Structures are given as C-alpha cells and as structure tokens.
Image (tube, rainbow over all chains, first blue to last red; front, top):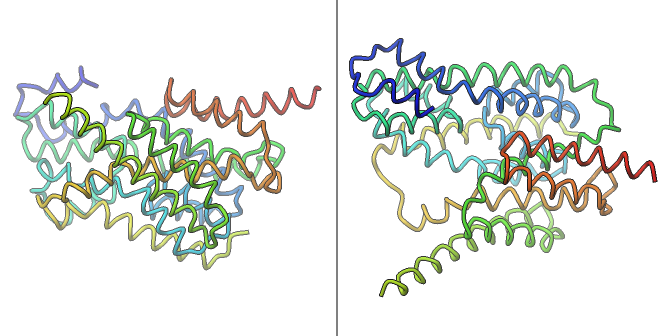
Length: 250
Length: 109
C-alpha cells in the first residue's frame, strides 16, 4: 500500500474520482480477509439458529464483525441481553479511537456525510485511510473524503454479500463438522494481532485466568469482571514499564 | 435456541450503540480529547475482552456438554500460534484444521 500511496504524493490536484478509486484499490488486499471472515459469520449465525433475515439484519445494522460474533456467542449462552450488549459494545469501543483519529482529516465534512462515514467505519479500511492521510499531508479535503468512501465502498458490499453467501451455505453444514468451535477460533484470530507488547500479553493472560476463576458468577457477569481485571492488568503493566524506563534514564 | 425478542432487542441496541461510538468524535465531540487515564485503559479493552470470551468456550465447550475436551484446547493453542505468526485467516484455518486432524487421529486410535 505504501507504494500506491506514494503515487499520489506531490499531486494535490488529484480529482475526487481519482482519490475514490485510489482508496478502492488500496483497500483491495483486505478482500482476502473480509470474504472468509464474513462468510464464517453467516455460517455460525445459521448454526446458532438465526434465520437468513436475522443474519443479514445483524450484519447490516451492526456492521462490526467482532461484536457480532460476541453477541451471537452470548445469546447462545443465554446471557441476559443487557450483559450481551455491554460486552459487545466493549468490543467496539476501539472505534471511538478511530473516530477521534479521523477528526483532523475528515471533521470538515457536512453532518450527513459524517453520519455515513461513521456508519461505514470498519477496521481495515480505517487503517488504510489514516496511513494514506499521514503519508500525503497535501491531499485536499475533498480528495480525503472521496478516498475514505473508496476504501469503504469495497469492504462494505463484500461484507454484506459474503455474509449472505455464508448464511445460505450455513444450513448445509452438519454438526459433525464441530462448527461451534469456529466461534472461539474467530475470536482467537481477532486477538492474536492485538498481542503487540508485554502489557497487552499481561492483559490477555490475566483476563483468561479470571474468566475461568469467575465463571461461576451468575448472568455472565464473570465475563465483565474478567475483562476489567485484564484492562487493569494491561494499564498497570504499562505504567510499571514506564516508571522503570524513567528510573533507568535518571 | 435464541429467542426472537432477545435477538432483535440486542441487535437494534448494539446497532445504535456501535453507531454512536463511531460517530462520537467525528460527529459530535470534534477535537476534544479523552483524558490520559481513559486512553490508557481503552487501549487494553479489546485484548482483555477476547480472552474472557475465548477461554470458557475452549475449556468447557457446549458441544461436549461442558466437559473438558483436550483436542479443542490443543486446537485453540495452535490457532493462537498461527495467528501470532501468520495473521487472521491462518489462525482460522489452523484452528479448524488442527481440530479436524486431531478428531480424525483420535478416531483411528
């Protein structure tokens, strides 16, 4: 992607259409992740007992894969709706950081446009867009907006279409395929790239141990307790490392 | 079985909540930034939520009636290793693939 972004450098006169297609192409490599991942959601949702309309509605209304898997797993586990909602929203909290990161580049757009941008804000396309904005500070405001929609316009229709394909195919998957296991595996796939540093690993480890220790707590509250333990462990580990680094310098 | 009421209540509320999270700064708060302590803890939300979901599912799977299935635990660890080394899609392929392989071998013995 770096190569493609560089092609726009030093060309502030890039038209909106050029920016749109540039975004479309820059987000293209993510097809390889989006298609199997959203198909998996379709299959797992049907396996959990949702009908095709419910499966598609969830994808269109929520349009955030990790939280959809989370909501599904907790519904299947008969967790109270409020707990399922809190945990699923926690999974999406990272997007508040995306939203903040986009303000300097896209905050100028009209309200209606920003509403649409917010709806379409997905991980992969966000990452591509912000990197391009940082690499190309001379990009015009309108080109940035067009580029953003170019990135999202590839990812979102594919996300819908592959979910439908998975939902239609899902019915044909027999129980002997152990597809229930696809849910923890999908979460593991989302977790692995997050384990970037010592504090991240500490947070994950503490949360895993606590989720077993607090599994007896009713209403799936053990999950929330475990997540909070993990968050505190990660933050404290980071503070500890910072203090140690400061002492090292002093 | 998932009840229709629970499904629609959760889906609609999650849809609205997720939209508001996405809209927050871009739509309403503008350049206001969060305090440092909030940013510090927000960074670890994802990495703390997923293990809390994964671990009970892998250790006490519903498919075996909640009894420990060593095959699933090994397959989960393989998926994690593949995810760390090769990325998202390989984690899924390695996790499901190793479970099928282990189940196949288990039937042979």
